[in-house]
Length: 143
Figure (cartoon, one colour):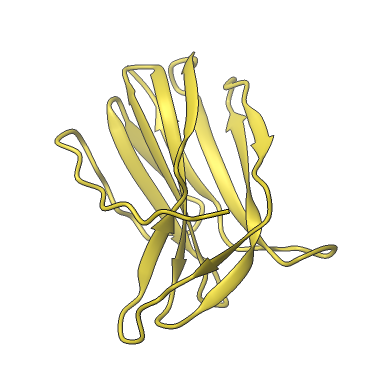
């Protein structure tokens, strides 16, 4: 599956936070990333307005020249009813001198969620059991 690198340039609220399992609050658009031991980063980009979520993007942050294989798990928390896993795929940082976040093409959600709920994602590294969880990124949904 071809991965597309996207530059995040949203005129709305875009926050980059690199703290483990903390949640970014968003009433428009927000991004949350979580570095995990081992150098792989889980990123979640939520696009919407108020408590309506149009879609999400899932990313993997990698160090220079690093490559990984795995999938994302996405779930809702605090009343948000959402759950899915992506297919396994290879993610490779083509840069030798800088880290980067590689983003998938995105996932259409088109749903409303309870005020105060959150959407979370984890990247699971590996090609079979056991997988290794590489961080938890969450975004709070609010009006």
